[in-house]
Image (tube, rainbow, N blue to C red; front, top):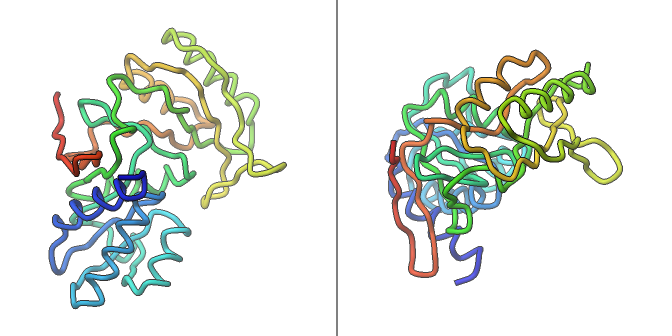
Length: 232
């Protein structure tokens, strides 16, 4: 089973949790896109859902495939969000944001009664941090914000390169018009402490640590999909 087949397996298992009439947060990324494709087939067969996309990229795919969409202002309370992750630990804490949609992903997940994560086995880790932590920041005061992030990390015993994400020769810009700092910490022993500390930096808009947000992770491997619940 190749990587795409595993993503499809995870997406299919998550689709079983979608019920007729649901208000559904729809995630961003390659695994979430497989979910959108499967969801669109169900919608074509008569499933009634209203989706809130977490990025312009996801919105375009949903429109192309015929998945009905609403804005989060129109549907401010959601039943379920299904989204991917870049890392998942045993407590179902996550690193997200490789696609640059972490702010909208977190807003949508927070507006949902439940969040289900879909991923392949390679995303499951004992300790978060091997994947670069995306930190969405305001362009104003970028250097000062990066220094504040570096000092905050150092106080928590973290080190590593913190670089502005690029898209070709230009700075990558999020759907919200912000920049992203990618922090290569390698290992984050206390994700809660880092999350709280980053939230106190004025130039930080949001970060890719999703703490205590997912209620279930569906992980696909060569043998198929399995469900993980939080060990807290």
